[in-house]
Structures are given as C-alpha cells and as structure tokens.
Amino acid sequence: MNYLELKTWQDSHSSVWREIVSRFGQSDYNDETKRKKHMATLKSEWENKKYQRNRAEAYPSIEDQLDDLYHNGIDGWKKTIKAIKDKYPKE
Image 1 (cartoon, rainbow, N blue to C red):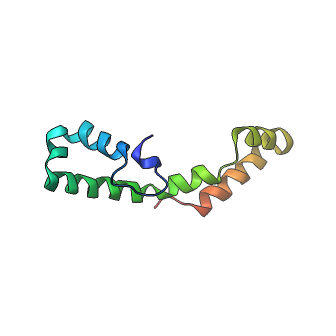
Image 2 (cartoon, helix red, strand yellow):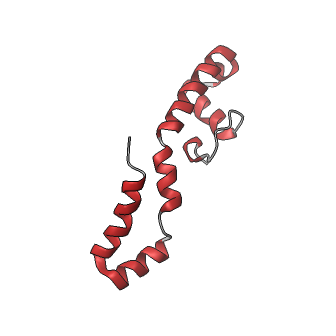
Image 3 (cartoon, one colour):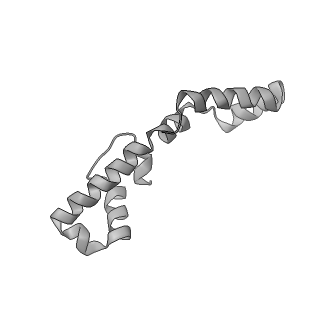
C-alpha cells in the first residue's frame, strides 16, 4: 500500500516509513528531527490528495461502469463519471 492510499493518516504505518527511507534514506528516518519534518511533508501530500481517495471510493466498480456503457452509451457513462469528478474536484 502506498501512503497516499491510507484512509486515515497514521505516522506509524509501514508505507510512511518506506516512503521516507526510499526518498531520503535510512539515516534521515533514524534522525528524529528529520523524520518529523519528512512526515509533515508526507502528511501534507496525503491531505492534498484527498479528492483522489474520495473519487476512488465513489466511482462505480468496473463491472458497473461497463454495464452503464452498454445500457446508456458513452454519453451516459460520461455523465456518471462527471458527477463524481464535480463532487470531488481537484483543488
């Protein structure tokens, strides 16, 4: 799991540790001051992607989207998707 996919922020989640180590190195993770700074950066990135998590939960399953395409055509499907994008816009 990528830290951006977390439904609720958890400093202790392994994906946060992995992201800090992969971006900044183990020594930055071991340094508490640097680790806190990097966690704040990651949390800010996570908060800025809230619309993506909301959209992902709101989109119908692929099966339902295909059914929508079959019954309502591409224009009907676009209306379904647009409603979700309008509800959760990029900021």
